[in-house]
Amino acid sequence: MAYIIPLFFLIFVIIINTVFYFHDKAVLNGAAAETAVAGAQMIRRKGTAEYDLDGFFMERIKGKLIYMTDVEVNTTEDEDQITVSVSAQRKGMKLEIRQCSKIVKPEERIRWLN
Image 1 (cartoon, rainbow, N blue to C red):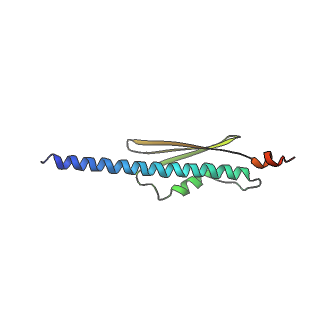
Image 2 (image 1 turned 90 degrees about the horizontal axis):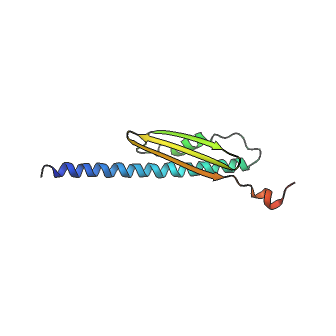
């Protein structure tokens, strides 16, 4: 009987860590997707002031992560898409997320602006 209680405690700790991991994964995934879409919209607007997508991402996850502590974000802009790459880790767990958003300009194609 003395070996059952520590086993239950170990299983409980593993379940809690797994739930925290997947919570942080969902938060990071959503924030990365939102940052990529916001960046694509900012590029579409002509005459928009400078923007900081890394700061926008960090603002979105501020105070929401439970388990992952060391978060690094990298945004890259190509001529047709924006990519947001996120890396987070804690102890032995590591998480890498990449979200992309196409930069579309439908007003140029629809209106055939000269």
